[in-house]
Amino acid sequence: MILLGRNRLSRRTLLRGAMSGSALSVGLPWLEAMAQTTGGSAASQPPMRMGTWFWGLGVTPGLWTPEVVDGKLQLGPESAPLEKVKSHLNFLSGFDAILDGKANHVHVSGTFSLRSGIAPTNFGVMEGPTFETLIAEKLGGRTRFKTIDFTATGNPRDAYSFRSARVKNTPETSAEALYQRLFGAGFNEASEGEFVPDPKALRRMSVLSVVGDDRKALEGRLGTEDRARLDQYFTSVREVERQLEIQTTEQEMAAACHVPEAPGSFEANYNLKNVHQNHEVMAKLLAMALVCDQSRSFNVVFSNSASSLHREGEASSHHLYTHEEFTDADAGYQVETSKFVRQNMEGFAKFVEILADTPEAGGSLLDNCLVFAHSDTSWAKIHAVQDIPMMTAGRASGRVKPGQLISANGDPISRVGLTLQQLAGLPVGEWGENGLKTSSSISQMIA
Amino acid sequence: MKLSIKPGACAIALSIMAGVSACGGEPAAPEIQVPQEIVDAVKGRQANFSDVGAAFKAISDEMKAGRNDSATVEFSIKALKQYSRSVEMWFPEGSGPASGLEMEAKANIWAEPEAFAEEIANFQTAIEGLSEATENPDLLMAKFRAAGGTCKSCHDTFREEK
Image (cartoon, rainbow over all chains, first blue to last red):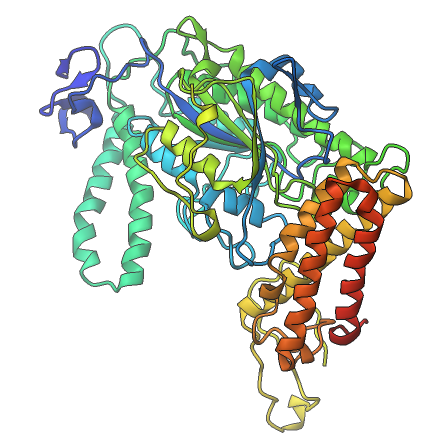
């Protein structure tokens, strides 16, 4: 293999290996590693990562949004579980999902407006890609996985990341499956001595080349819609190819990268106890996968939209409480519902803590991440989509200034998506449609 | 005939039978397809009015507890403002009782559009007035009653309570 500099490949690179006892040389397609870039490597300057963290059913008015007292964030009763990580966080308040007269499709309009910049016309129908998939495209050019998605609920439908209006990312639903995907077959651990590509991967790569050859011939016989479907299919194939490229190319791994211990088997469902357990184990796997530069994007679901979370031994879900629990006359809020909000915040605190406790390049993994956390609604009792609770965690490799309460006054929620895309380096100056169209990024967030 | 929609139904092909038995050898009644966008519009409208009602109730509960200036009151009024701005869009052509879908909206909403638009405008004005109570909580009771009055006025003419 011809290596130019620390991490650059020659365009004439051939991969050499053995298959069925014979020497084999395989040419490579153009890879970013062949470009003359000045970008950092995994071992020196860690890359920036971005991801989302989702929880369902929002917060209680007046109990979650922090105040700024003497220049410091003072958390509310529902955000109190975030106390020990609050220095890493920004709280975003007062951003609205502007629906342009369209119905508020409960538990859908908020998330879809925020993620796609388009208020949905029909229930459950996303009308464009969600912004974090655009970011994943930008950040994940050379990584094994474009994105790593998991849900702590065990339900694969609990996912809110769309590559297009019709194609939704499928999350991993168990720690075991996530481990196998990240660190099972196909993971190239840094090793001493000469790198030998995995012969199985080389054989699969060859099969996919044949598929690629047939593609043009097939396309010529198809109509527009079928060509679009085929294009989506080949996008998936391309992702497999990319994984194979990684497996057949010597990777430079960060010193801290190692294969973690395989997790045990856990029950995965909406029981809060199980959700917390799965979430913590999967978050730790994700953290190591990020250190090993397996992906630079991630999407985590702690609880689903219209949350089905329930406590051990209870039949009533968080969702049921939001609609059926009476407001406590003295307290002025739904006491049990509020406890579920705190549980979600405990989950987020744990997630942030795991990233902050993962060492990387003299700092922490969190220093090089930006986690964007949000819910589907603000006050679930009335499915409100104004002032949807949102947070960021991390410094995004020095691009973001944490520790702030960023308040807007009914501004379009799409300002957040625009800002995050710009922080990821996407050349976008305006984003969203109709009332959600904006060219105003959130400068206060930027370091 | 009134039909119920189960939440989560996606492909809706509602068959409205005219009481003719297919086993009698007579031709089956034509199947009426309700377009998905009409189903969504009706479901969305009903959900939104339900939330408007819940916001009114939240304000009412807070007033009863003597908390006219609570975060709940302020938040509920903001939510009502957001909902009120779009009410006229919740009644697209074809989303009336003639669709066969179960609803409380009466057909005269579409038959008397000017009168209905006036009711909506009165509601929106009253909600704007209610917003003043976030600055001056002493106004809350009067503004709340005024807003509730516009709801009743509209319901008296354009809603058939089930």
